Image (cartoon, rainbow, N blue to C red; front, side):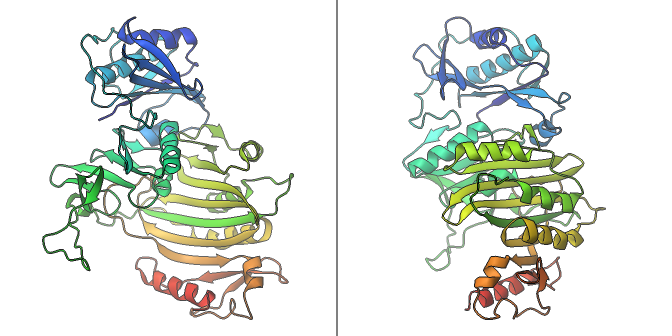
Length: 473
């Protein structure tokens, strides 16, 4: 397994401290750079990377180290310095651990994981051999074939780090799939779960009984012809493949009482130099939790305090290229959103997926959904919105086992979409309740409530009937 080792320090690692850390393999190893100097690499005498070190990140959002690492973090602000060891080289893992331990000792802080980053001594590298660097030239990619890039992660939660974000972009540009391989105890951040494209990309979980399985579907997998593929049952036919499901995926599926409120919406704003982005996210967050988001960033950990102006500036600087963002809440009220901002012919689009977690004794605030929809429809150019309630973890992480789908609670159609629909089709509904008007009476959005029980799947039947009706099917 590839090892990621992280130093959490109150002070920014200065150049001398970084140099001392890089000398953990002795003076014979080489130092190189990638990504226009953003990544420093410790290399063997042939120039092949052993350890890649990302530029230190100043984290100003409380709870990110606990959420992503399960680690006790310094008081914010603190510096997050991440090192990644090359796969399959024991000495590389030791080098990464020693690097992080030296940084923590020199500038004050801790290193994660503690069992890896414990020694300050020079690592013996005599006779060490390293495989050639993959053609992807991405520190996060461990195996590259003509079909997929494979990323091996051994951490409590696979997050959308700078490493992984670069890998996502690289495989997209190359037309490849991305397969993330983890041990059994690892979970995914919702940001990674929502970013995984379709086949052949997948989350591959190692399993003692079945070897490998898909962490999102449970399908048993095997490595074949350069990628992980599903295993067919002996009774399989072309019409019924009957893919075996890993037993580990089906364990621990009892209802714990934990719930998630999931809200997905799209807002389309007129292109204007005075446009301020992020207001739609803030409005929904305020209605659901009673407070604005805690922080945001272009990767995980989310490192910046919540700021509409800074968020808008980043999106403006990256235009016309799209901007991907992650937004987080406080540890007391788990919440996470991913935002994709895109310039299109229609204007500036914000595609948002947000989720909030609640424990067994906490009430899911479904009564706040109408107010959130009203705010979007009235002030934030809402196009459409879907609200679901699902049985899932309060901490929002995605485990490698069956959780079941969410159940639709409400759907909102924006005012412009209502106006463009022929006749009174939008107001005529196959549901038991007539839609509720939101926003100005002269140009309302419509709120459709699903009468089904949130604990079963009848809401999906109502949702599908509504979608067919609105499309004129």
